[in-house]
Length: 212
Image (cartoon, rainbow, N blue to C red; front, top):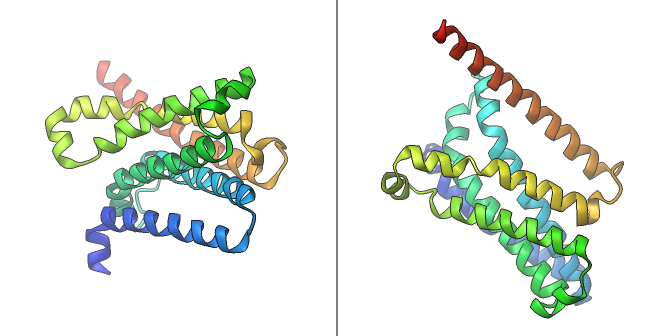
């Protein structure tokens, strides 16, 4: 148990790889038709990417608000590994969607403007997540300096907005906004925003008091 907590980043990355493999083998075993397999894999990896992204975003405001949370320190330490997992699942989703469902670059010409915009937004988000993933290690933080590293990783908020827009535009589970997955997403986002607003408000109050 102590080893798990001490090496929590490594174990989260290991868990993400194992989860991706289990997802792949379960879907390919249960669904015999290859086109349907691709569709399910694309959707599954998208939902996993969004889930991990949510917990990466939630970490800061949640740990700030609930300081008595017993695994607060471990959650904060795990945040970088969770962020790397976001890129990993996002990359898997992109590969299956682009080369599996779309058929590669040749399929771009068959898409309308809505889908082209959605793909452009998701590709931009994937680039941001890639830059964050490759700079999530201690030696990269030391090389960049913490200030520059922190500035770069604030782009996660832009990536999150782009991912959300992409999901709402073309995500199968978000075509019906009253579906269970859509409702869960909206409730989760509302909870995150409430905590984030509370944290920002508290920060502004402290800063305002210092300037008096």
